Length: 142
Image 1: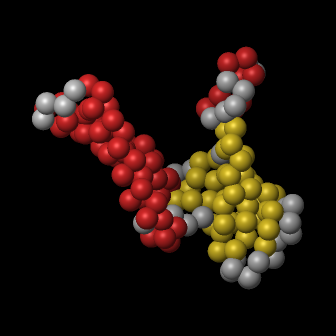
Image 2: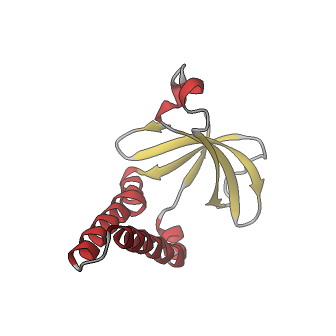
């Protein structure tokens, strides 16, 4: 993944093309991805994701072609907030609120897990809005 001040970009491979979308497969690695000793401690740190990018029709791509996917750095930071920071805050607030109201520790744990599950369910219900907001751009590799 390369990053400049305005965009985060990641290399991918075109796997499908239709009138509306270009589907790009990208390999997501954890921070350990480039470590020589990664096979000794965490071999399962890679994930393959498919991203659908709106097909403008102005540039043609071929299946199997390597491309760059770009997203605004500000949107990347916003995604981190929605994916990790806000759920952590919900979890902590639910634990403290349920403990303050007199729930037992196991009940507080279950309530906090339920609160985070409800948060992610709401995010899932609003996925159409997020799909419109978090837009990837595609460009040919030079």
